[in-house]
Image (cartoon, rainbow, N blue to C red; front, side):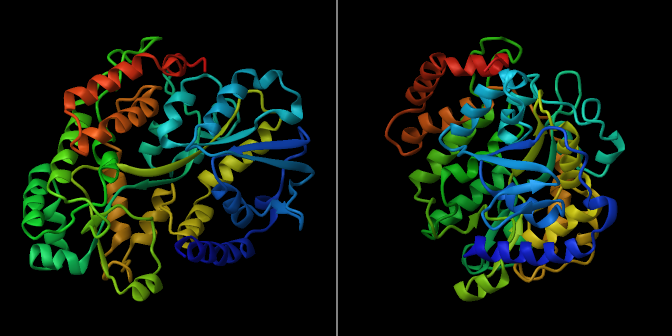
Length: 429
């Protein structure tokens, strides 16, 4: 239901935005290649193009066009590795493929940016595609820092970049803290010391605090230390950052006290929840930062080396990630936190959320995004692979079935035999 309602708002706002667009903004560059190939992990970007790029058209059969260029979509799941497998197979030989078969644009989630940004297979939007550097001036700085290569050049551009915040159930918070005041809930999880005190209270009241250990993972993972002992090594040796050991041990502690479950007080939710849904469910919610800042999600667009539609790709990147009016309309229509500082600042002025009890949730998100700019990210190309493997190996430890030492030993052993980790880190796929 949430997805359907968000899509309705997305299309409603998009219709207004399209009516305001005319002239050069809707023009398409002269044809280069005959087919624009776009690789995605789901249909979200296709839905956004339909609404917010007036040059993008689809006929009744679902055939897509931009001017006289056909648009071909390749949508593969990221969850089962099919999407990365496709990119890993195609990008190194993209320039050698038949022009109509070359990847032109690809979408990346934040967790995968390091691998592909450092690979050398993505074009620089400024020096390679000719987008003026000032076009990116209104983007949040941390979104640009995520996609800089070793030489400091951008290799992709984000259209959305949502800072992570915790939603909390007001009735449950009132039971836990004795009040549903926003300051009390925020103080309850503002740092690890406060979070432990809140866990004690929740255990005494036999309440569930969070939905799962996985939900706490990004709080500890964002800004954590290196997953590899030497980030510059061609064959990385796995290492467990102190923050990730802390996540596993704290999660074990919460699980032992039965503080995980579906009736949790705090949870990481969707970027927007429609008021009608909260009325139907009989729930009211609040919003607050967690014990550390983190990124809930970001969506980046990149142009592949070898693209035979570089000019059209550049136009799409500029329209979908640098156009303040488009990004603001997208934020209003879909509820996503768009990558425009001035647009989100303007939306936050005097905002009062009907979902979160009248609080200025947008102001809270802008402030969180500004704090992310100061976060030093210690990243390697193997981060996502190591992170997912670590979570898998820690599951029996968190469940109380084995010791931490046994779980870590299993992780290090399995990491040593994952050949694709070394290939990814070396940028050779």
